[in-house]
Amino acid sequence: MAEDPREALMRLAEARGVSLAALSAMLGRNVAYLQQFVGRGSPRRLAEDDRRALATFFGVEEALLGGPAGAGATVKLPWLAVEAAAGAGADVGSERLLRPLSFAAETLAAAGVAARQASVITARGESMAPTVLDGDRLVVDRGDRRVGRTGAIFVLRRDGDLLVKRVTRAGETLTIASDNPGYATIAAPVAEIAVIGRVKLLLRGM
Image (cartoon, rainbow, N blue to C red; front, side, top):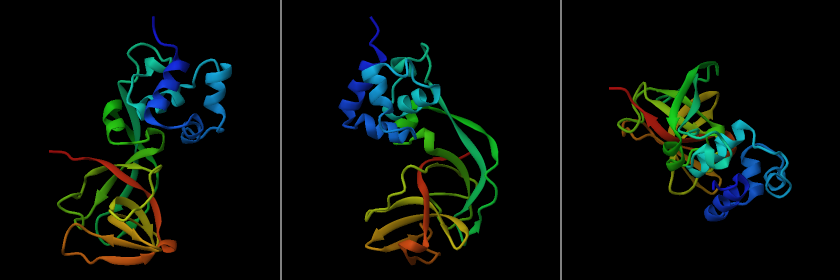
């Protein structure tokens, strides 16, 4: 007999150590949304987008959470007409949708990508070479904007320019560095930088 979607959700949440309230917030819902789904049966079924986001988060098939059998094999992320400069900086441009790109749900889950808050943009310039090359497509998770001491690659906005850089934080200062040693490292107050999201995956053509 198939596991009840509510029981499956509770089991997955407990195994991951995350609360239903936190998952509800991740979905952009009222914090009681999933608790009501589990405890009261309201709603009777999860909305398709919510089910897909949860399946991606847990790295499971949508069918486990009430979707049709075989669902959840792929997740579509929007590829936007936005370019982030791996160089001196570029205008933000438009956020026009070019087309959706399909990813295996397991791939996104393994990379820690919250699909509901992720999109794909294009890198321009050479300051992050050899890690990020001109024309690479970047999966940016806007739900992950916390910069720590160890550093990671983020998309950020500074003085109106959109950048992709390796960023670390010490107190109220961000260190913005390039992987290409030919480019200078910048230190800036946290208040002057808008962190858009963390780069979780990179797509590169042959």
